[in-house]
Image (tube, one colour):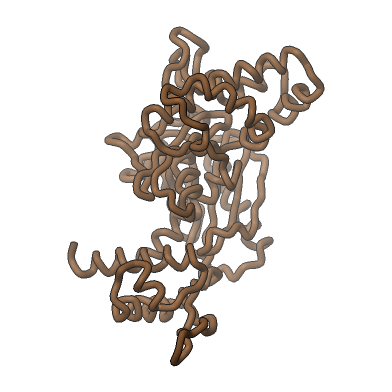
Length: 369
């Protein structure tokens, strides 16, 4: 690496150190990251000039002058995220510390029409006004899309959920007056989950909504694969010749573990299905048990292949947490290595993860400048 790359790497390390420790002296940072004090001082000065770091007082001294504490200024900038789903828009506003400041869900069925994209922009402007932030501090908006999104070409190549192919990002972005980034919803959700996870640099994220997807995070970076299709766990076969999936193939995990499996054809939404479960409806209980069997199969396959933590996110999380013990009972006999199920985690953001990850695209880019 050249000197600029080394400095950029060190800057990211210092920012991450301050995320983890909230405040620290330059001596603490230098010791913790094995950097020289002059290097740390120079980078802290640069970050302070950009308004990203501030002095927050002094720390205890073992003798002599008390060392000065530094911390990140989380509200120096804001970023927004929008997740587009089949029937809803999820809008979120975060600061540089990944803190969710404002969140809203709007029911708006997807249509591949200019009037729909104009509506997204209208909702977004109203959302920002309602949040009451200084819009001059807004970095931009990230958009989370369900399906295969090519970040190099800016093209949503295929989305079974939205039933579109080859949708260019600029078709949406032209309705916004700020920078617009985008990526696959599951990749972004995984990115959000691991952004500030202590001592976890690699994990697999499994996203469960009306579609099932995922992302693979290695060394705090999303692994995209050769064609940008990595993490499409919803389309691994779990039942040969089984139910027809949204992709047109048979027996995919998504055909058994999307929330559609639970709701169709008898329920309008997932809340209604679980209300039926909680009243002891036999057919609903049987369907939920079958669902957990297939979900456990998918989770076990992922764990066996990647040998990493598995984080489950999406709209299924609040309901899954209630039956975590039952899911664990199904996972234990499947494991070939007789290990405890301590690798399984639930999303911190539940159904907000994709939108938060989308907002983090702008934060990540800004902090890397």
